[in-house]
Length: 318
Image (tube, rainbow, N blue to C red; front, side, top):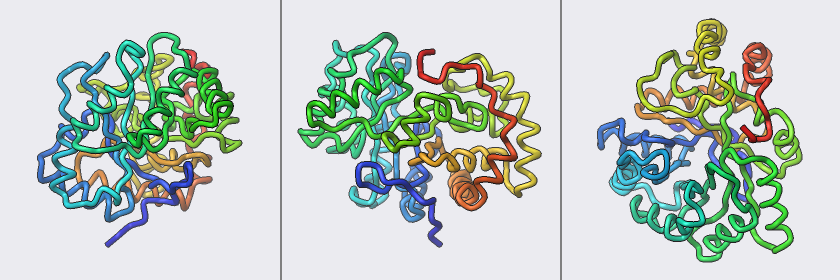
C-alpha cells in the first residue's frame, strides 16, 4: 500500500516530499538489507527525499561512513536516480581554505552520485562572506553539480545578504532554510526575522532535529552524539516529555509522532528531516505526517505551552 507522505511544498518549482530521511549517521545504524528495504519503501510512500552528507570533517571528523553506506544501499535498491531528491551539504567550517567545488565533488564521489538536487550550506564558526558563498554555490549550479541551495542555521543577516547578492547578479538565491524546529524549539522558525521570510514565501522551512536527538521520543539521556543545546534548555525539554506523551496519547499516537506532526503544521514547512533507521519508524513517521496535515490546528493548540526557547535569539546569532 502506498501512503501519501504529505502535501509537499513547491521549492524553486519542485514539489518536495513532506518527509525526508537521513541526517547525521543514520545509515550506520542499520543492516545493509534493512537500508535497501527502507529506501524502497520510502520512495514507494512518496518520501523519497534523502539528506546525504559527508560528516567526516570539522567537528564531525569521526570517521563517518554514513554517506558511503547510503550510496551502496541506494544502488542496491534498484530505485532510479530520477525517483529521488537527494540533498547534500557544503560545510563552511574551513571555507574558503577548503574549496567548495572540491568538497562537493568528494561528497558526490563518496555517495556514488553525479549531482545533488540541492545542497544545504552551513554551519560556520565565524563570520563568512555571504556574497562570496552565494557566488561559489552558483558556480556549482552552473556546472550542474547542484540544483538549488539553502542555508543551515545561518545568522539571518547573512541569509538576507546572500539573497540580495543573487538578486543583483541574476543568480540562484537560497530558497530554503534548514533550522532546528520542534515542539520545544520554535524561536528561529516562528520568531522574527526568519518568520517574515517564511510568511512572505522568500524561504521554505526544512525542519531538522525535530525529536531533539531522541529526547522528544522518550530517550531522555541520549548516549550518542546529538545536536547542540542552543539556549541550554534540553533539561527542560526532557522534563516536559511526560506531559507531551500524555497529550500524544489523546491523539492516539506516540510522543515522537506528535513531535513530527507538529513540524508539518508550520505553513512554510517544505519537509521534515528524520534519522529513521527502522521500518517501523518510517511507518510511524508517515502516519505522523498525515496526522499533522489533518489535525494541525488541534495539535498546535494542544502543545502551545511547550515553546521552551522563547527567550533565545531568533535571528541565528547564538
